[in-house]
Image (cartoon, rainbow, N blue to C red; front, side, top):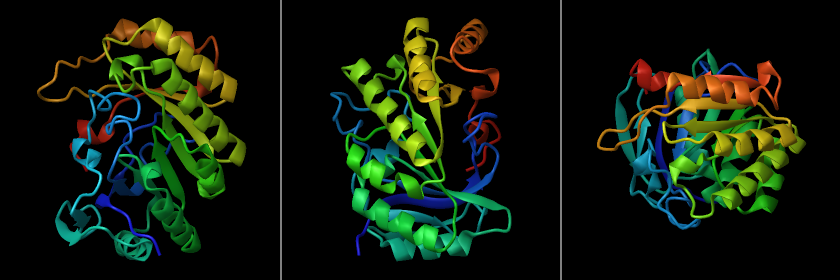
Length: 269
């Protein structure tokens, strides 16, 4: 059986996604944060998003994994990496509460560890868990097609140009759009998420919205959370209004939502 590198496993509430189909915003989840991010490792010529809010997850093979000792308790123990799908599933069973909605596979980038991810999802489905995938990039479309039928919900991060995640931004958007299509065609309840900053441009956002329209998926317009030590600024109110109204030219209102990181706002995990 495969083994994988996990940064942390804990219980909290989904803090991103807005009130659109496919989003699990506000629902209780167990988060499994995978190590490794192909964008941060330079697959698109950069070191990933300049506003990354999980920089520790960029490390490919972390030696230790943090495990919450009690659901929502904010206290952790550490175990050695890598771990098996069975070990990870047992940890999830120990953290399961009566109000649990789903398991969030996040990162880093879960699709960066394909064999472990496939085996892990199989274990989760065997135990009747609902699977929520948070992803930003893969160029292994055949693998995504293979596992997509096992994914119940998914958020695909369409990177705004201001994230500086690629030297060829248009190519990255094309690849992320293809991910939307694969998940949508598999029956997954999928939506796009786009983090916008003060540097975000209307013409770039319009391209992202067109991709959402082509794939008939909702979009969560997420306001960036400023990172200490950076100059990243939140978008203005006028930008937020303009972008939402622009989205309305391509999507119906129920497929457009504005999101903030709830967990950062109220200081939960």
